Length: 137
Ligand SMILES: *[C@@H]1O[C@H](CO)[C@@H](O)[C@H](O)[C@H]1NC(C)=O
Image 1 (tube, helix red, strand yellow):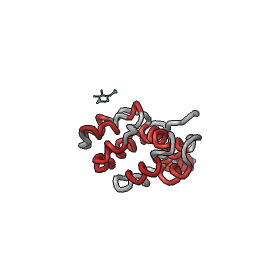
Image 2: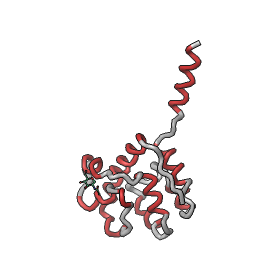
Image 3: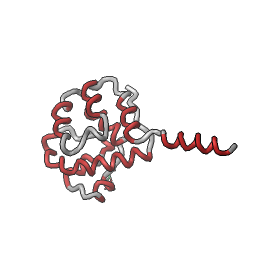
Image 4: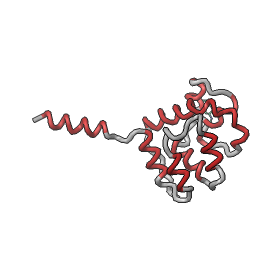
C-alpha cells in the first residue's frame, strides 16, 4: 500500500513550478504592461543574447513593461556576485544588481548583450530556489 503514495509524491515533485512557470505567473500579475511584449518575451527561452536588443527596442517605450518584467525575472535580488563569477564585467554588472530595478538607458549598454546569457542564468538559478515575484498594482 506504500507504492501509490510514493508514486503520487513523485508526480507532485515533477510537476512543481520551475523558474519559467514562476516567471510567467509573475508576468500574469502585470496589469499595466504591454500585453504583446509580455506574451512574446516573458519566457526565459524567448530572451537571449541574440534577441535582447529586439526585445528592448520593441518594449522599452511601452511604459513600465520592461522594468516590471525584469523584476519578475530578477526578483529584485542583487545578482552581482553570481554574475561576476560567470565573468560579467564592469558596467554590465549594473544589469545584475537588480535590487533597484533595471537600468533604463539601454543604449549605454549595447555592448552588454554578449553577457546577457550569463545574466539570464543567474536570474534563472535564483528563481529556481525562490518563490515567484508578484506585482500587486
Ligand atoms: C551587490 O552585491 C555586490 C557583491 O556582493 C556588492 O559589492 C554590492 O555592494 C551589492 N550592492 C548593493 C546595492 O547591495
